[in-house]
Length: 327
Image (cartoon, rainbow, N blue to C red):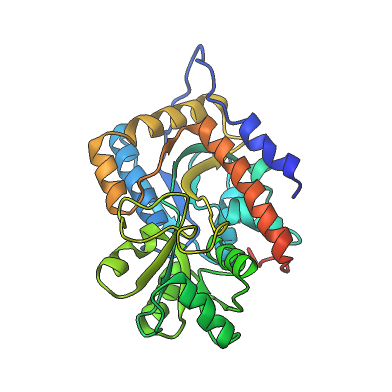
């Protein structure tokens, strides 16, 4: 997908003006589709929004997991659902800004089929290793990987996901010859990392925070410009000697772009209003999400900027995959 396509996210995501009348939305149960396995921070964010919107709307709001192919199975499902707002998507950037840049074809077009509702800038990624790997700094990991080419494996939640792209960025910037091992979701990848079946993971801080604090994995660096409040003793990649190894991230909710305007305006306003306050902040903080809350307009701008960075990584790493099976 060309960069100009992604620009439509920002151009078409501004909050809608007040309407002379409002449709009744929702007038039936709403599903929020999580395109990854249950138990991830994406799932947790979706369930938090479902609970809060359900309380306001007095309608059931449930979260369903439809995982596979780096999140593109769930995204394709939402894209093909009726555009009445009864089926929404909660996701990371993997099926939205990564997949269109690395797959030859998709059954959906993110800019054509989706529009931003609400998002949160994530705390970024953290580089973690299994405790059995005798490296304690990022420099030691690079040195060890170069001494043992293709013997150090890094796990991801699937080919074409953010974790995969982060690993390729690390390889391109450091020259460390790591071996990519894709999984069907972050949870099984993290399980094998803890068990030592794979040695490294470039994962979201929110995914790994509990494991780091429990000593099940060792954090080497965070892939962000500043240290994370949840891990103040862990250096940034720049501090650890790997400048340029940074990736921004987000978790957000998207709706069908063809959703009725009045319903979309209601959804955006209710999502923004209910997903704020100290209680929500604490819950998100416990997930390792301490980033900026993004309204629809800012979320669209964030998606566009994210696609630009990912496009640079894809081009430098020469990543091209066959079309995923989203059926």
